[in-house]
Image (cartoon, rainbow, N blue to C red):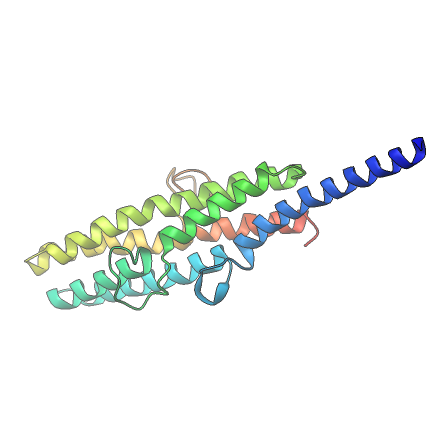
Length: 210
C-alpha cells in the first residue's frame, strides 16, 4: 500500500510539473505562434510587426505628401488605423493594431515568466521582451496623438511639422531608438522596439531548445 501511495504521489507531481511547463509554453506560443482573435490567428509579436510596418509605410507616404494637406491627413488616418483601429476603423491596417498587439506581447511573456516551472532563461529574456513591447505600446499613444494633430491642422506647413514627428515615431516602432546616444539600441525602457523584442524572443526560444 505504501509503495502504491508513493507511486501515486510521484505521478501527481509529474503531472503537475508537466502542466506548469505547458503553461509556460502556452504563453510563449501566444507571443510567437498563435493567438485567438489576431489576423489569421497568428502570434501577437508577428501581428505587432505587421501592423507596425503598415504604420511606418503610411507615415513615410505622409512625408512624401508634404505640401498636400489632404494627402498628409489621409495617410495620418491610415497610420492611426494600423496603430489603434479603435480610434480609426478605416484604413489599410489588419484591424488589430500595434498598440493592442504590443501590449499583448508584454502581458503574455510576463505570464510565461510568472508561471510555475519557468526557467531562468524565460524569466531573464521575458523582461527584455516585455520592456521593448511596452515601449511600443507607449509610443503608439504618442503616434495617435501626433496623427490627430495632422488631421486637425488647417495649414499644410503646420501639418508637415507634425508629419515629420509622426514619421520619426512610426519608424521607431520596429527599429527602436538610441535614446541614450551610446551608439546602439538596446531593449531598455525608452529604447527597444519590436526588432529588439523579436531578438530577445529568439534568444529565449533558443535557450529553451526551440
